Length: 290
Image (cartoon, rainbow, N blue to C red):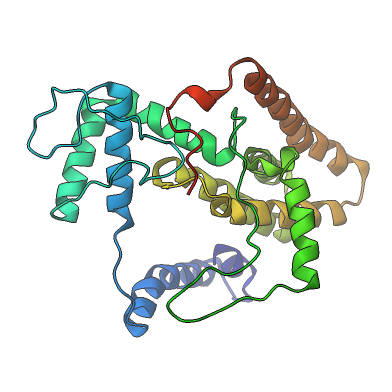
């Protein structure tokens, strides 16, 4: 929406600002309006996050933050804990969203280090950093059963794309941290050296994909590969546009310095970490996956 406002044929900066505010307001208004129009059932994913974080905090702190009545002395048996799936252990049930928020905030305030340990491990699994037994679930061959009777039948194009995606999943490109680092490098390069209106649009797209991935540090409830689709798509989009639009060797050298070099350094560091001290044994159920 910001990119659209920047490119809009309006007479002044003031009108462009007002248009940007109006377009961004649509992003905020659209979800509740469409949910009401479609009569969607209200879900509360925050309670999944709160439940999982309380389990993770209890695991790393060695204290019981699972009980609502304040009895936290006993160390709970959390051999079920997995940083890959929010309901690997039994889900906690809250009387209300307010109770979930209060218990979540209180536990984080009491055990900030345990919270960061839990969330860092979750985020590392999502980005596939330092783990050996974290093969991503990158491709769906057929539709799951659903109450609407909808079915997807594969075709030759779908099968061909599946072969490519599954092959890439066994390379560093199957580890989303590679795409996120490349995207952050593109955003920084465009922010610093971009001059044209198209550079500003590409910078906004790259920044969007980078920030989007970062939100999962606090919001992820599983390590599903599909969570990072937008970051990967935006990296492909922005990277392709930058390469195609190159007019001299300067931009290529900048791409190598800001994008390729950080990616290669990250791959080397992550591969070394995985070889010397893989994170697979930090939690008892690292292989739990959906």
